[in-house]
Amino acid sequence: MSPELVSILVLVVVFVLATTRSVNMGALAFAAAFGVGTLVADLDADGIFAGFPGDLFVVLVGVTYLFALARANGTTDWLVHAAVRLVRGRVALIPWVMFALTGALTAIGAVSPAAVAIVAPVALSFATRYGISPLLMGAMVVHGAQAGGFSPISIYGSIVNGIVEREKLPGSEIGLFLASLVANLVIAAVVFAVFRRRGRAVAVDGDVPGAGDDGPVRLSPARTATLVALVALVVAVLGFDLDAGLTAVTLAVLLSTVWPDDSRRAVNEIAWSTVLLICGVLTYVGVLQEMGTITWAGEGVGGIGVPLLAAVLLCYIGALVSAFASSVGIMGALIPLAVPFLAQGEIGAAGMVAALAVSATVVDVSPFSTNGALVLAAAPDVDRDRFFRQLMVYGGVVVAVVPALAWLMLVVPDS
Image (cartoon, rainbow, N blue to C red; front, top):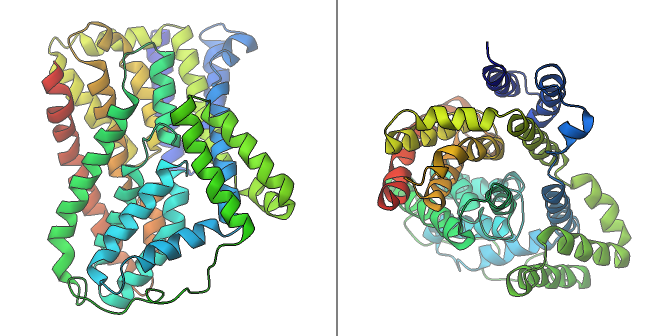
């Protein structure tokens, strides 16, 4: 068995173990990088650590630290309350408010599961009270999170754009963001049209708690400063091209210096599991690059002889595996694997990257994924077995349909 095949089989084992044994895939990937790098690729520790993504580590820690501060001091509560007030008693708008809210949170740097964890309990409580389909509300929350998930300063966007830059592929940060935004907006509109009349009140007006009063959540100095910091992050990154991770860390340190109590809570809420996941997977991908597996696998995909067929197969692989494992981990592995295939020039790299990103993330409504599991757990007073089956069927439909549509809209026109 060739070393390249061994390294790919180990990657498959990592995904399987992470899915079936609930072990962090990043930790497994670090162990795999050590084992394969030492025993198969004959790399020393320096060679293995050469693939460690230091820049992405800073982005992940910095952005999630800043957002954890926002959650610790109640800024996110204020954002949720302010968004809910926007409906002014119009119940039919609640799913769209939740879609927009989670999209805004991920667009400014929240990890997708963190945004879903914040909004889903509120959204599903409204669904129960007003007879809105929990599947509709859950799908709107998850697709909203993914709609904003590829902004240039978001976690997903920073990761994918970093990989594209590292692999020296032509890409478009705005194009990637718009592809995910439009795809999830269209899916949300279809889901809303199908399920809006299945609830007793979703299509009619009604009184919404907090719509007509100031409510218990008010702006404090800490919350005002945090909102200013979030705006400053956007301006610094988009307006002055500053590094998102270093900027976020600096802003978080400034807030922590003034309000140290919030900082102590926030440090524990940094998305360390996501940091471990991304750094582990990308370190293993670095080992694959060092031993030539990336080139070997890419040439194998390209060897199919039909570039468009190879492209759609990669999209389906990303969607299927991501429905049961980490979307970020899948993107971190698939995009580098596609580099030699894209180097042939018959498929546009920007469109292919966008199609892979969309295919690997829209399926996160699956109950086996983190976001889908959060939605399932957040739904009060529902038949959970039935809701689980609904999420599973819906996730299956998304896996079956969306990769082909992403391929058709983003890859075919550029081939």
